[in-house]
Each structure stands twice: as C-alpha cells, then as structure tokens.
Amino acid sequence: MSGFKDPAPAPDDPPHAATPPAFRPQAAPGQREPVKAGPAKRSAPDPSNTTSPARRAPGRAGRPLGPIAAHVSSAHQAWLDPVREAYLAAAAIGMTMSRLGAALHISKSKISELLSGKFYPRWELLYDLAVALNISYWPLYRLWRQAALETENKSRTWVDTSTSRVHVTMTATRSTPPLDLTAFRDLTENGYRLYAGVFLLAPCCQAAIDKTYDQLWLSWNQALASPDARRYAFTVLRGAVMSATPHLDGRPEFSAAAFDTIALQALTDDDRAAAQLAETIALFKAMSRLPDNQLDIMVLRTLHGLDDEDISHLLGLPLPVVRSDARHATRFLEAILCPPPTSEGDQS
Image (cartoon, rainbow, N blue to C red; front, top):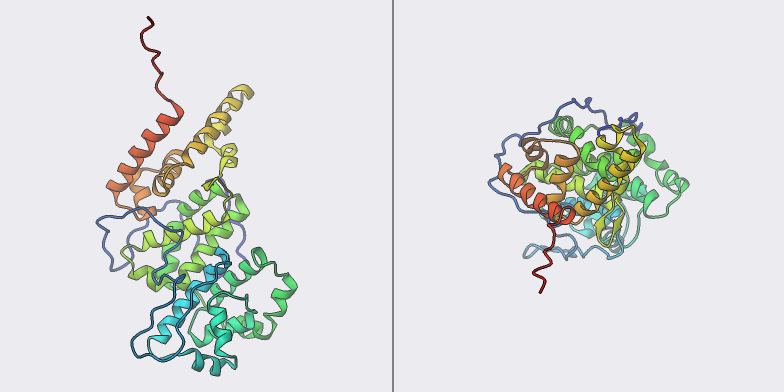
C-alpha cells in the first residue's frame, strides 16, 4: 500500500528514473483514448493465443508451434510467451525450427519442446535462443530466474551453473529499456504499487511490479500496437499480482491488508480498533466477490481514495466505464454489508 518503500534496486535491474509522487499516465504516443473497453477476461494479454497450436502461413515450410503444456506455471509462461511471439515473428519471414536448431546446434524437437514448455531450460540454452531471435535477454533472464527459483524447484546452484558460460558476455552488454517504457514506468509505478500492495506484502509486491515491467519490456511493441497501452500494461500487472495472491474458492484473499488501512492506524482505542478491523475484513471479503474491473476500481477508490479520473488513467478504462462500474460495485457492497431490514408481514 502507500506505506511501502522502494527497496534498493537489484544489481541486475536496469536503471530507471525515480518515481514521482503523483501519477496520471496518458495514452502512449500516437494513440487515442479508447472509446470503450470491456472487462479483462484473462490475467495477461495473449494476442497470439499461445495455448492453442499456432497457425502456419500457407506454403510455409517447417513444424508448426504446438500448444503450451498444461503443467506450465504462470511464472514460466511469463517468459515463455514472449519467446514464442519472437519465434512466430521470425517464422513469418522464413525461420524454421530446422534452421534455428542448426544455428544453435540442437535438434528441432528440442526447440519444439522448449517452446511448448515441456521442460525448463538451462539459461545458456535460452540465452542462445534469445540472441538468435533478437530478444532482450536481461528482462528475459530475470523472469527465467524468478520462475526457476519460485515455481520450478531449481536451486540457486543450478541457476548459477546454468548461467556461468554467458555471464561475462551478459555483463559486458547490459541493455536498458526503451525510453518510452522508462517514461511510462515513471508515470505508473506509484499507482501500481498502491494496487499491488493491497494484495501482497512488501517483498512480493515489489517482485510483482518488477515482473510487470520486465514483461512489458519484452512485449512493448505489442503494448504500443494495442488499443490502449495503459490497459495492456495494467492487465499485465494484474496477472502478476493475482498469480502471487492466495485465493480462496477462486477469489483473491487479501484480508491481511486490513491491518494496514488508514482508518485502523488512526485509532488509538483498542475496542474501536477491533471493531474497525472486523468491519474492514468484512468489506474485503465482500469486495473479493466483485468482477475484476469493479474490484480493481474499488481497491483504488475505497482503500486509497483515488478519484475516478486517476483510476481511469491508471487502469486504461474510459471514465464513464469507471463511474458505471463503481456505482454497480457500491450497490452490491451495500446490499451485502447493509442489507435492508426484512419485514415480518402482518400478524393474524
């Protein structure tokens, strides 16, 4: 939440400007405000539908890209999707798995398995693939490393040994994000931290934010080509946050944030604080039942006091949609938390 402080940047993080105290992200250069936007249907943009077999251009030689394996975690898929996108872009101008395999000195079946997520590759192999497909490998490396340690049960020793061959080369050729992405981060990071901090404690909150901007670095061209880069980016953030948030019966569980609300911190009387805590936990449980857009709006509106225009800019949603969703959400919460008294009817 707003009380979190930025930790010192990790040694391998790209430099970026300090986050200003206020934010109001505008549409990316060359884009117009969207006319309308519907609720997000999935945790992250997936323009290629990479969970389905890739369509192959008529007459193009080579093996089609298969679907992503069912066991692949969201952390694994965070870096796998951009790699698949890069391969499909290269395949559209003549690249095949056979040619790629010959360049990397591995079989095309191995490449097919890697691109389908059937095994978790050593970084040396993924680095060679990134170079061949012209992928920015610093954000890719951070996403690969995070997934290896958090969801793939890989040890730090395994991570270090699988990186050793290319470590010197990577260090000597450190890259930085596109300038417009750096500017976008300056405008949005404060707001993203407010949102993520409701669901995640400080270390996990920062990890989700860093993961978001690394994913955006790898897919920034797709973000700029989307109807609204702000909406694209927030959907990436939401996916990163929700994948790290505990869920109960399919709904996000964020009652722990009740202890960090401004209303509770302002109270000094123990009895009043206990009553406020119980009220806030009940509110959070009711909010977890809201549809995605309504939940996002109410988190920023109710818990952080943002106005509708700021929420519109941060979420990339039209202002009328924000106001309409806020009204629907408010009516729902009032019905749950303050139900009207039931009439017992006439007694005969």
